[in-house]
Image 1: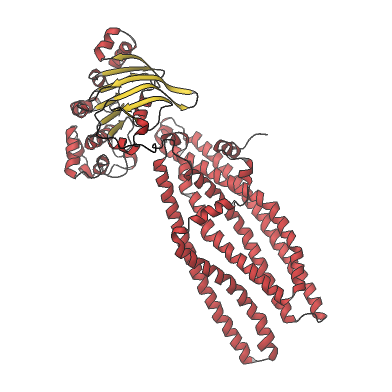
Image 2 (image 1 turned 90 degrees about the vertical axis):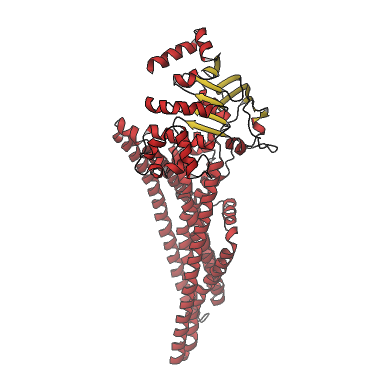
Amino acid sequence: MNKTPLQTLTVKDGDTREEHLRPLDFSLIRRLWTLTRPHRGRRNLLIVLVVLRSLQITFLVALIPAILRGPVARQSIGGIIGGALLLLLFAAFTQATFFFRMRLGLQLGESIVHDLRNSIFEHLQRLSMDYYNHTKLGRIISRITPDTEAIRAGVQDVFFVSMVMIGQMATATLYMLYYDRFLFLVVLALAPVLYIINQKFRIKLSTATRDVQESFSRITSTLAESVGGIRVTQGYVRQDVNARMFHALITDHSHYNMAVSRTSGAFMPLLDLNNQFFIIAILLLGGWRAMRGATDIEDIVGFILMTGQFFTPVMVLGRLYTQAMSAMAGAERVFRLLDTKPTIVDHPNAIDIPPIRGHIAFRNVSFAYEPDRPVLQNINFIAEPGRTVALVGQTGSGKSSIINLLAKFHLPTSGVITIDGFDMRRIRTDSLHRRMGIVLQQNFIFNGTIMSNIRLGRPDATDAEVIAAAETIGCRDLLENLPKGFDTYVGERGGNLALGQRQLVCFARAVLANPQLLFLDEATSSVDALSEQRIQQALEILLRRRTSFVVAHRISTIRNADLVLVMENGRIIERGTHYSLLDQNGVYTQLYRRYQSIQ
């Protein structure tokens, strides 16, 4: 039998089949309950209102047989009017309680979702790069949107409404015992029928609900990917192909939703039919007992009314069960994310590195993104303070992986990297990042203005300092000539700027940060020749007296490097200066001639 997409996914995520099919997980419920602790005042008041509400509903119904037994039996018009007014006043009180219970429930649900989304976002900022290498954007988005919304429904609706319903059932049980114990035993004898129905449908609902949420996660993932790659989609005329793929996903999602609907559609009518049988049985037996004088008509009326108060919660709880499954599935996924540990965690004795001189050493360093698939093998070199190291080689040779290790985005699989003699593993990550600057080939431009994007390099910088940083790399006039100058809105991912302009903004960001270590990963490959001329002199100023690592295809950048490392299949195969490597007439010479012919 072929696996469904969900089955394959859950195996990948490490879920067992038993975990996937479990109904209500009380460990998850306890953990959800801990989310209410910061709001314990509101939560405790809500619990009081929940208990009061469950008592009010049954007491309101109990007033009816009391009025029948009293004023109606005595044929007292005044007593009947008084009883009606009492019912009216108590009903108003009950509705007021209901209003505040709903209001507090909605406020508590919003507060929990607010805190949870903040926790998810903060946790995502701390996760290591390998998590993002293996997790699609859509899956991350689904944790913070539909999954947290499912948790909101679970807390503000399922949990507290269930408390009201359970309290109502308990109070109705006491009233039924008071009215007629024999009839209550009949209800008790029929209870196993409810249990059998619940057992039959709970696993089906649990599985179907999780299927729906996993399917929705695949939809959000595909949607995010499609929107992000819309230029490629249109450029390669993939619209119809992508549309067919998305249609298949939403069809799959529709099937899962229909499975939930079919299961719920069978579950609820069965509960309702079972309740009707109970009422019919009680009416027959109660009527028979009243005819024999074993009980009063008023008690039979009260018992039947309380039967409604007992079985109505059964129906409500049946409807809430689907929501509870959705909340459990959402909580599983959210807590699985929150429990994901960063793979790069500072050593307990890690230190804040002092001002960096810039002596970098790689000793027998190997690294692999995936086990048994090394991308760097036995790398050894030393970068002297204030010198520039250029990394050259074919795509996939390991150049960017060295930058990733230097930036401590990943840790080496084996070997040691030292900075000024300090083992990188013993340096606090934040301390290192504050002293380094990095410019990538595809730098990220955040929503906002050019000014705010450059200021990311140093948030406390003044406007004059930001402008001075742009002037240093010779692009002040280019940026000031934009429609609103430095206050020009860049759009999502810098969409309102040309590719070269985005790179210049990122260069200005690095200049403003004034880093002691500088990493340039093909940072000038997207800059046109005219722009490169304008920034080449600024780059020389930026690189001066800083230990810098440059992954570059531009000959001008490579030529001025103090050390050139030639990479191939994760190894250093040649090293030296630009001119000494040309004299060797080896791999570097071939690469150099190729770059030269292209440029």
